[in-house]
Length: 612
Image (cartoon, rainbow, N blue to C red; front, top):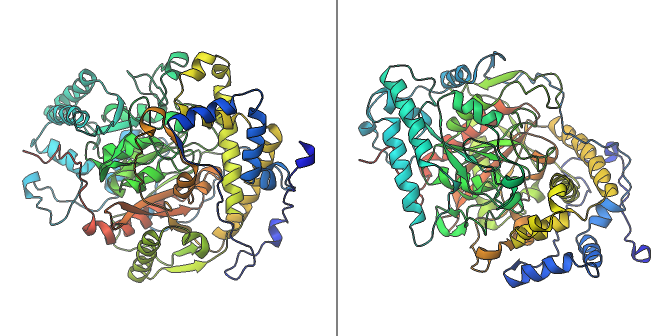
């Protein structure tokens, strides 16, 4: 198709880019050319893509219409490729932090995290008469267990009853792909005995924690949301992050539902049902860590693990009204996680509060297994959230055209939240320009697609494996397989380029602040229930602010800041410098403190700790 070759962009050197507020760099909006497809249309599209006659033409048209040829395939990029977003450790001299012994055990790190939190009352559960909605925290569970008000075993029984009830609703919530009541009760019994002996392992002892079904956790298979992957890749033990939680005494309550192979941001799974949004069960909870977001939102667990390859922790956290935290690439071991996107994927935490995200992060972070690629091991610092001296002189970078590229309710809510934060702490906003954001989105898509296709290639040769896909995931994997080596290399050159651009932004500011998503949760279509759905337009709106965290390996966190007119949650995101997790947590904690009294109870909520 050489006669139809699209002209490619010639990228000028990064040094010539103006990143100031008056830059003439044009903000390029996403212009996604793909209709929403579900049901029969999704099947027809999959057949076209897999056709020997029409497949190649269809892929060519899709790439050209969606500007992959212009921005990636035929582009001229002078920068060298950067294949893995590893950042050399730099001591950032952050405010109000404490350095943690790198050899500390997970339980010791949990205790050190607890020591960094503001003091909480030791009163009984009956003493907590909240004037506003509040989720029970890890500290609440730990205190109730220590005071003998309730046992982990009783919590486990209530949890199992709640999960059973959730599947009996007119609209089944579909929180889990797998959970084993017998295993949950066994863990809870062991934890209860430890409390009876006065020897709990840590504050996480007996606390229910859920795990996305992309992460190995015994005794469950790891399906990745599919009906077949666990048959060819058996789970042989706990992932490193899960083993660390287990060593702290946490009760691992099962494998949460997810979008098949993490293919789209909707979270809808045709095999196991859609994990519905507890704020409105007719809507998505977001993907791909959809079940993890839903169980936290609904009060079943104070925290859950997810995997974030393209916003897959932060998007569902935002749409479901909880905290979502993705650390720096390399901060948390990735061993035992499905190797679907090894240079953009990262284990993350979803939690009801920033404090709980911090505690779980403390447990799972630390030295990486020796076989994983890394630079010198980074130091671990924890934020002193109990400090009486709030951090000062924080500069928040805002790219106005990008920040405002969302629906009006989100724009107003997030703008007001940033203004409130700056007024309360005397922090400053810095207007910047971040060029080529749409280019970065496409380069990330080429990267995550190529890596997923490569990871699945040996299985895709077996047509039976392909035929067991949901139709939406089948289309996505077909598209992933259409990227070539030239496009992958160009994408990695653009990764290096955007790393340099963001380094320049971080020379001006401490963090970048954005809305977390460009829209709130949308409705689940009936024809998506059996086939899944492809909705690249809404998907592109949801993922708009996520890419730098994954493609560049930057830490990022989302915190709830309000609701739209339909009562659906809105999140605000902070994107930080490499290794700046403590500063991000300080900012999220400050933002949470200003919004928490306005948090609303979801329509579906299980008060498994506080109920009588």
